[in-house]
Image (cartoon, rainbow, N blue to C red):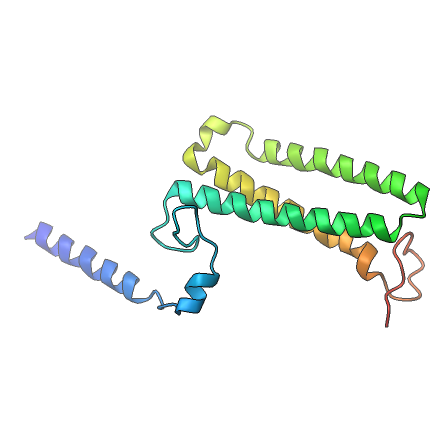
Length: 157
């Protein structure tokens, strides 16, 4: 009798949890990133391998955006040799920091199992998006009167 009651409770909880997932439109499903097997990255049925692939794809997308922003900053400041030299050195140092930060966050890879690639990719993406925000300051600029603007340009009104 207790086993039957336990089965009913589990079935009710599973049904309730499933019922709370809102149905997405075809456009929403199509817009969501997918794995190579065609499953949406945000699918509740996604495998760990699929989650790892999705996280890696997101990290690669962030990296591509960082490279575009980096190139824009270089192009906008191409005439300033001192800036270019120091900016490139800063970016090289940031890459060393990023990699060391990820290694420090996950120092013993064997301890994390099959989720490690997803976790590392998530950290990579977050650090990369933070760096994009930093580099965007050289594109967007700062408000006029900022006496500490340094090499940031003044924002256009």
